[in-house]
Length: 87
Image (cartoon, rainbow, N blue to C red; front, side, top):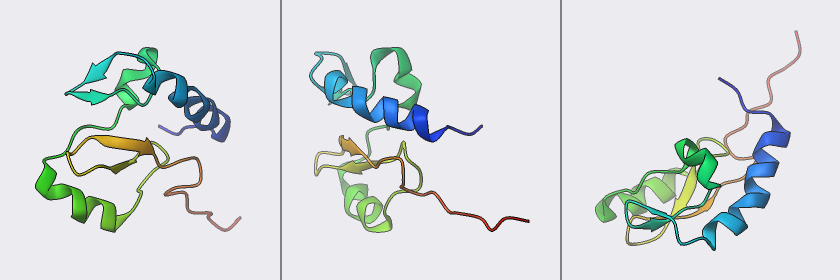
């Protein structure tokens, strides 16, 4: 399943609105629109945060995490995207 760059950009634009909402998931602020909760990064155990942040972003919908294990922000449309050579 792939996500278009436009869909990712739209989600990122809406993430500011969503983070201002009172909806939370796992005790963390919702970074994505409520209608797209399936894309919300999961909370990590705090002891895993440093390692996860060190490894970086694996996809546009991955996140940078805070010390409490909550995702702080989405990585963005360029994160984890590898340009493959044309055939």
